Amino acid sequence: MTQQDPAAAAPRPVLVVDFGAQYAQLIARRVREVNLYSEVIPHTMSAEEVAAKNPAALILSGGPSSVYADDAPSLQPGLLELGVPVFGICYGFQAMTQAMGGTVAKTGQREYGRTELQIQSEAGVLHADMGSNQQVWMSHGDSVSVAPEGFVVTARTEGAPVAAFECPEKRMAGVQYHPEVLHSPKGQEVLRRFLLETAGLEPTWTAGNIAEQLIEQVREQIGDEGRAICALSGGVDSAVAAALVQRAIGDRLTCVFVDHGLLRAGEREQVEKDFVAATGAKLVTADEREAFLQKLAGVTEPEAKRKAIGAEFIRSFERAVAGVLADAPEGSSVDFLVQGTLYPDVVESGGGTGTANIKSHHNVGGLPDDVEFELVEPLRLLFKDEVRAVGRELGLPEEIVARQPFPGPGLGIRIIGEVTEERLETLRAADAIARAELTAAGLDDVIWQCPVVLLADVRSVGVQGDGRTYGHPIVLRPVSSEDAMTADWTRIPFDVLEKISTRITNEVEEVNRVVLDVTSKPPGTIEWE
Image: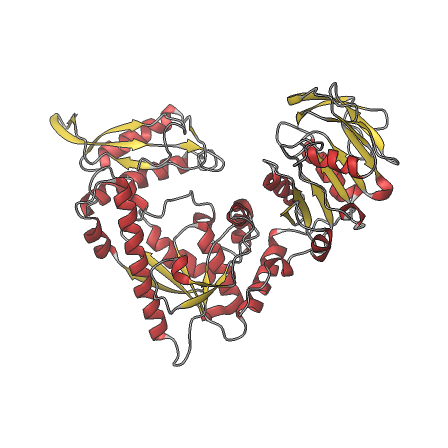
């Protein structure tokens, strides 16, 4: 059985040709913000292969090279002759210029960072009515000195005599600066104008349309009789993936939720009640709390904890799947495994071409070698914010859709020391208070994640009820981040911190101190273990 090309059900894409840019994914995101479907392709893809994707437009990305360098990534022959609109950015702008007979000057006069763009009297479509100058973000050494024939120069900078040009007849344009970054405040509008006005595209890539297309795609992939399983974590990605597949094939999907006992307060109920109520999905809950506690007994080293939890999850999932197969009608098999893979995962793993059929244990681990699944990855073309939008479209509750990232090992890596039932209860209670107060203060959109940590191996002297106590500290770790690669600690108002601290020390046994982690990443990680 072959895996269907996910792009087959998608509309005509705006293809971002990647010349080694830091921002190729970001350009695709910006295009999608204009409600147009976009994906990234490598610059090595031939014009014939590009044409086969039936693109609505091409955007040529930036890149670190000089167009004069021997090893510079080249613009594939015939790419500009496909008859589709083309927009060049930075390196792509220069490569386009060179290919069409313009001149790129090897000036050595570099412009990096914030630069003033001077709009010419002939401002064209992209820069019309934007005043005589604006701030843009530059990153280049070479410059375009002569535009190709038929192109009008619409802007310049001190270091770039041709900083933007357009040719409406050919539906082509380009800029030397980076319109996709927030440091170019009017860059998104420039990009929007190219796509909607110069290229004449219709903005139809909306959450509703995406959901419809993906449901149809899944239905086609699994067929009229195929059965699938999906491991639900409680997180947004697996929930939305499961909801899409359920909408496509109904009760031929079985969702498996492993309760490992390391969840936050209310999470099992959220999946069992809210998710099922919103989707009507068939759910099997595997209560594996005891097995995980046994596995973690006496384990204190962080990496050892992670490995123990990962290994036990595999066993738990294996047992649950065996149960699903046992309950299925005689002679039936479960051939499909649903995963919440997102577009950044695909791009970062080299395009995600992969094989159609993979041994499931390569993915979820530990299943019998003779159990072979075909992957169903309905979200593989989406970014996180698009996944949330599709989830809302499918009627998933906000508690699931807007959920903060939560690590797979759960509270097990938020207890410094051995994981025991008593310590889990203590941490669960403190975490629930912190989450409730942060939500009440309207800070959920400000905080990317707020781990609550129990220093189980630390005790400090306190005074409660006129008596001496020797209790544990709780650490609050609120952070702001975009991608978790770097993070800054979130400046929470003192009155909110006061409420959290007072409630935790009053309501949670064994805790007599609340502390705030004010460390950025780097040097500190977001989670403590």
